[in-house]
Image 1: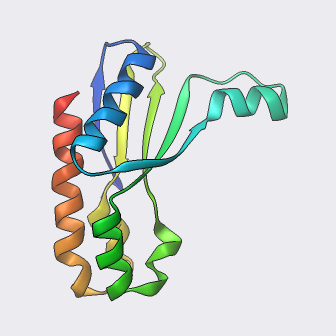
Image 2: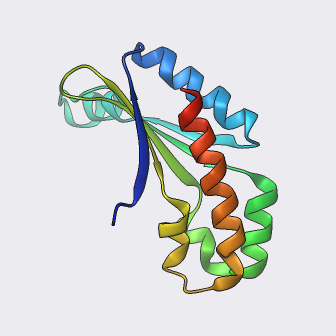
Length: 128
């Protein structure tokens, strides 16, 4: 079973990053961190890597509800969404599958929250 949901597009990488951030905002998510993996590897390792960004997305209301039910869930937050350039030049947007992520807690109180986040992520990906 996969642990991400994804979509592919031929749009330019930087445009897709901007579109993804905007779509996340439309669904109530803020981007708490934006890690440019390519730049980090170049700076820290003097190594070349494909365009690759990790966006740490958080919906404060849903995070509050989830942490209220499962305090240790913070170790799994924020929910990561990645944007990268595939080998063929296609831009891929992939989001963690919240149901898989939350499933490791074995806490059924979180089911409705993970379903909500999953639906929101699906709409984000569908909009790209």
